[in-house]
Each structure stands twice: as structure tokens, then as C-alpha cells.
Length: 414
Image 1 (cartoon, rainbow, N blue to C red):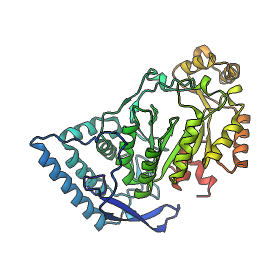
Image 2: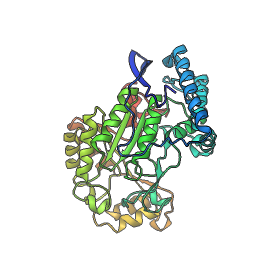
Image 3: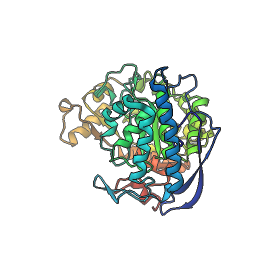
Image 4: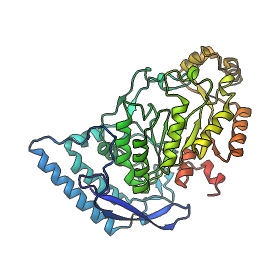
């Protein structure tokens, strides 16, 4: 279909018409042929059609999907459509782009394209039924990570082993999300990663495939990474954002320069991550430094150096986040000399928890004085300082999340 990536490379051109109440652009959609295909360099095409009797039927379905989607978008202005005022008991907000009828039409297009097997996989997948959190819908491009960061919560669910990509294709993932009536396409934020490193060498192609499939709907996308993103992939991300009018929020994790190897033993170096910031900024994206978690002790003593380096590389802001500990996380941090484990235990006792009582349930550890110092230094450098990842996504997209007390409403006067 024309709204989705298709063999004939139909491109959406987004033309700004007017600003809405929240400064969210309303759009009109036009189509041109000749769009570059958004694929991971060196990756194989994920849409493989066998030489069987069903191939002609699937090709016919793709052509039908293209025709139906073009008719849909030419007859109804995307920006003027509205969902019901409440979905799942929560206000839908002022930025809903697609009516239920339009969503049903897009579902029909995709079902014709992916075939019966793809429909079955999309319906069975967790994304078709999971409840979004207020600040977005987690989209999982893989599971696991072998970077073995001391503060990481992934090991509470998966061992530190090389990650495996998700089975769904990009179109199947989009279809699965559209089946989920709790998720509002074009309105609700999308969070790529969650239980994996989305640009790990094992997952980068799958993550790019998902971004390719989701970007045309213009739901604000966000990912967090410690990886080096190549020039080619950075260009693809920039093109996906520009050509579809889709905000993409990139969070680059750097918590320390001096002690990175002790805290993140197998992750790419901070220097490579700073290069990622430079490449994304050069493509017109607005990357944020992700300083989460702030660790008590020597591990956070060089926070000013981290902020200066990120600012010079082209970061627009910083997410200043707290530490969360579980039984496994505390055990790993206790073996690291650059973390003040006694300060963590003291806060746990203040909450009535002995370290021996920790489970997989995560407990928030706040260092308010350190967070205030980081925020003050960031503001001196001209960086936007926010407390949550979704706030960075909101700042890039210039629209609040569906959280009723979204912090950015107050910060930016929305």
C-alpha cells in the first residue's frame, strides 16, 4: 500500500499546513514514485515471496492494498480525523490522526500483503494485546543482551547472552500494533528496545525494518542505545524521519567516561557513542544524552566531562535518571569498586528494606543532590534537562504523552 513501504517505492511527502493547539503539524499526503528503499545496508530483504501458487495472490493483494490506501487518504484528510475522546479509559488527546475506519482499512491492506501466516503471527504476538504504558508502546525487536552492564535489569528476565531478533517482519509488527485497539497510531509514542539493545549487531537490521514499517504512521519513535550507529544507518534514520514527517528521538547512554569499562564491561566505548551522537545530529535528528542511571560513588564523579563531551558532539538535551536496584543488580554493583554500595543500602533501609530482602522487584534509588548538580551543569551548557525518557520523546515531537501529568506540559507551557 502507498502508506506502507511497497515494491514500487511510493513516497509520502509531508507538507505543513497549520499548527494545532499543541504545535503538532497537520499534514496532507502526496505521493511520488522514486523513493529510496529503506533497508539496513548489507541486510537481506525480509519480504521473500516463494515461487508458488500463492505468490500471484499476494502480489494482487499488494496492488489492491495500494489502491485502497490511496483512495482512503485522498478522500479523508488524515489530520482532521478523530478517534473517540477516550480509549481504554484514557483521554485520546488532541493529536489523533486516524479514525477507526481508517485503521480498519490499513489493517485490510496489511492482511492482504502478509498473507494468512503473517496474519496469524500478528494476532498471536503480544503487541496485539499488551496495554501501552502512558508514555508509549514498547516494541521489541529482540530479546537479550551480552553487554553485561552492572546496572542493567535485563538479566532479571534473560541471561546475558547474544540477543536474538524478533520473528515478526516489519509489516507483521505494524499489523500486530494496529490490531491493538488500545494503541492510537499517529498519537501514541513508540519505544524501541525495552528488553534489548536495539542496535546490537544481531538486532540492527530488525530495528531498522521496524522503523521502516512504523515511520509512515508518524507516531513519535524513540530508541535508546549504547552502540555505534554507522553513517549509513544514521542516514536511513534521518530519511525515515524527514520523508515521513515522523519524529525520531535518539537516546545515547553515557553515564561515565572514566569508569565505563568497570560499569559496562562489554559495551562499545563512550567515544564510539559520542560518534553516534555526531552522526545522528548531522542527519538533522535531535539526540539526547541518556545519563541513567546516576550511580553513587566515583562512577558519577566525571558527570561534567560527560555533559561537555555530549554537548560538543551535538546532543540537544539530557535525560537525568535514577538508579533502580533488584537483587541481581545490587549483587553486580557490590562487586564494582567505583559504586558506593553503602549509599544504596542506606536508602534501602530508609524504605524499610534490607538488602537481603531484595527480589526481582526494582526499587528506586534517588541521589537528589547529584541529580540537581547534573541538571544545573546541563542547563549552563544550554542542554535541555528532563527527568524521563518520554520527556525527551515529547520534546522532539513537540507534543505531550498521554500521561495526564506529563511533565512537559508544564516545562514548555503546553
